[in-house]
Image 1 (spheres, rainbow, N blue to C red):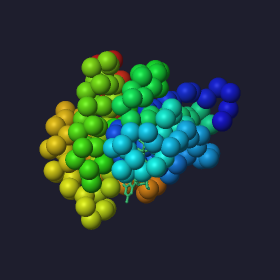
Image 2 (spheres, rainbow, N blue to C red; image 1 turned 60 degrees about the horizontal axis):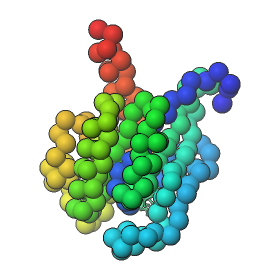
Image 3 (spheres, rainbow, N blue to C red; image 1 turned 45 degrees about the horizontal axis):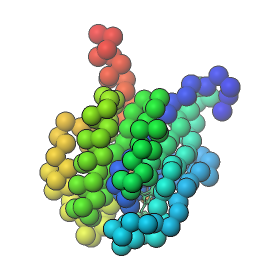
Length: 183
Ligand SMILES: Nc1nc2c(ncn2[C@@H]2O[C@H](COP(=O)(O)OP(=O)(O)OP(=O)(O)O)[C@@H](O)[C@H]2O)c(=O)[nH]1
Ligand SMILES: [Mg+2]
């Protein structure tokens, strides 16, 4: 990373266990900085023992001048103040929805509402875990999310190609928005 590189910050958010930390780990060129701690909420403990409590950070250099800085949020609602802190200065947000878990889909839907109520940014919805046998499938997950106004796509956060496509799509949305503003 050079001293004069642009600071492209993006935020990865979504409910607990939806794949935020995994997405960042999959694409980051550095060992991500994570803040996973023992979960406290019963509903979280039912799914996993470790959960992000403050943020994740990863980095992906595209050219010397273009460096993506990826910030992952906690999924637990008790840390929702971190969502507002982390979105400061971001050019876009990726929301993850876990297609295997209805309650998680509903929580991601509420997180989308939280962000949209505060500001309008390039937003992308990624539907995760479609590869798992207990997935509700893409269409049903989208229906339950009920945010048809947001561009959405499938994404296996463990798959580098999928994650790259998600990043490119968010960048494309940002370019579209910039064009619309200058038109
Ligand atoms: N098969 C499959 N597993 C996934 C996918 N996305 C995430 N996972 C798995 O889901 C689990 C949870 O992923 P995390 O990255 O910890 O989720 P998180 O959103 O950071 O969770 P919190 O920090 O607790 O909110 C991990 O075991 C991942 O490997 C996916 O698309 N497919
Ligand atoms: Mg996490």
